[in-house]
Image 1 (tube, rainbow, N blue to C red):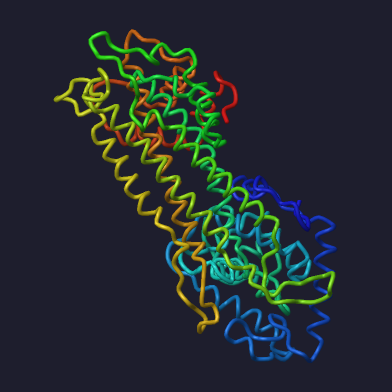
Image 2 (tube, rainbow, N blue to C red):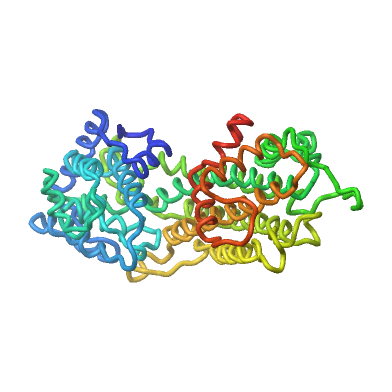
Length: 510
């Protein structure tokens, strides 16, 4: 149910990824009608009002007569639907459409109730406008992506039907009994002037990263165990004296996974006892914890933006006026997206270092080189680590901030932009890469745990190994075609099955 406020991240995820049905609340319909009455009153006046009876951007100085205003609104949609490149993912388009509908229903945009209902009908019919990779500068919102969505509402352009086939939007609307909208004053502008694309991608990245951070705590614990490391560094009193919240959560997660392990702290008799483990093992909670705290900040930014009504001009119902503003600038979201790309890259980097340690016979404390069955005849996981390293290197490039860039546009009217869409697009790639990096560590660490024959792993570790093997990912043995195993491990991590397996032993992890 979409009201005038109160949409949550869970609502966005449900619509974008789970095809949840969308309904307009009575208070939303009331607010829509009230705001529209203000726009209609201003449209009837002889004085020009930006977005209602004028051109847009650098062309805002021209007063548009009533006979041309419908054409003006149609034209802004058609001209701004100028994206290029590959199609973006269905879930991204559904998220940005739902978020635009959320703002439309706030009563601050002046869009008629019937236009909002058409937006809901398109979502419920499973019709997904074709939106392209390139076109948004993240200021005046995600103009090109939202314009492609508005074009579908008009029955123009291409869209994907519920069967996955791309066809003319007008045909799809007709098949589902949806009448194309005839835009009136301000409506074209209101449908495309928001931060909805970058916000939708931020919310989905947060959902994915929360799962990956828990998974990384699990794989770090497995690596510590396989390396016969010590869990004393996970003691809560050590983390209490450096009170970063995420650090304590990560340490507690690792300790829960390692509870009851017969490998932790166990050293071979012919090896000098280690006083300390390497940083990639000992400092795992500090690195993952700092990332968790960055997620918390990004979540706060996302929640604030969810509560916002982003449009320009905006309707102020209490004052009965329409005012120009700069709330469409994507800087707050762009910064958060870039911060997340940085911490994701560092989490991937430390995971790769643990994997490399597991494979190096000089640092793995008794494990065979590259965890190979017959080293020399078998190469083991040598090249799996190469793949992981390549992903880490890619993530480092993706961590370069997009938000520090700006390219002036619209004849220097829009002379500073956020590049928030670009920050969101590269973060999606980074999140996918991080999931694969964690999967490689999982693959290596579970094999290493199994190679510690005669020593008993923690019950939670055993559960992780058993679940991974049940998913078809094979354990130690002679060399085989690795790519299918690694991909299956990545799916296992991405779908949250690693967490599910471990939490059946440990209870909920933080």
